[in-house]
Length: 204
Image (cartoon, rainbow, N blue to C red; front, top):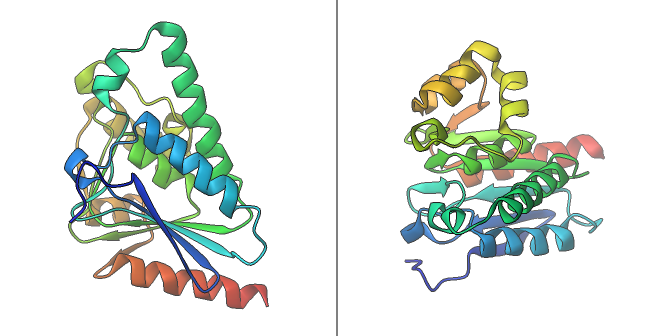
């Protein structure tokens, strides 16, 4: 079992597919400063590689990823907070612009910035127990990593407002119904690998 001393991300390659797994479930896989730095480092290495045709992002145990570490945010002054927001925006835009097919294999809770990451991917597959939410309204904050633009384009303005203003949670079936995800799966990584393989076959 991963613990708080584990590396924030575990990286492996399966054929022509890279798999990045958020690996601190005890911290709810928060996208903390060190996690964002590691994510940036790995993607900077992976995205230029011609032999990699797909990249899968997934989590551990019952968590895909949650947002920024609230305790870290509380320590930031306005300038540092702006820099942190811009860093996440730039990183997620890099994921959105990747030449590879990017797939979010959502194994569990997908909250805040974790949802922003999933939205930056080309495809989203979720487990039956996955939960989706942008809870920032209850904390007096709003996501700064592109979700306010990507989510309305994907599911429509009215549904997006349910996320941002009410902060309510969506189940996988509800997420499928509004078009947030494309598939509910019993084995998200296995099905994401199948999607990756299909995309590679179409390229040939």
